[in-house]
Length: 81
Image 1 (cartoon, helix red, strand yellow):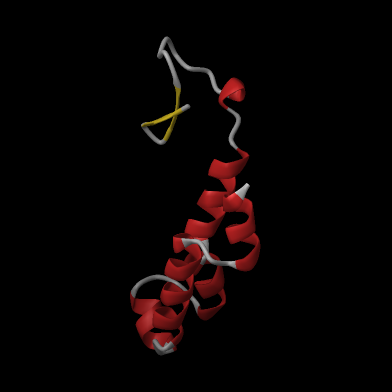
Image 2 (tube, one colour):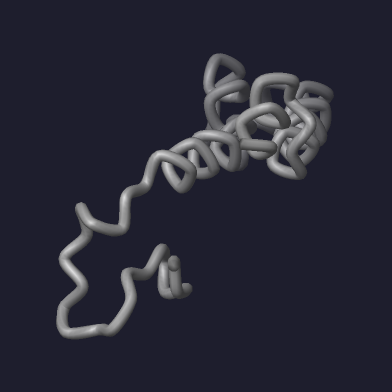
């Protein structure tokens, strides 16, 4: 339950990382952004990828996962019990 409260108020480490990424990418010029292969319109989407991954992890149901013979379900290679 606490994860959902932190998520709602944007207090998770993933939110902190997203805000940091957003700040760092926003100060780059369009030329610098083009050099790394992104456009200014993609900054918000790319910066908040960690938050989207967290949402997926919180919504993950172990019963929905095909465990492939493993004793526990995994999330990106880590046990999820």
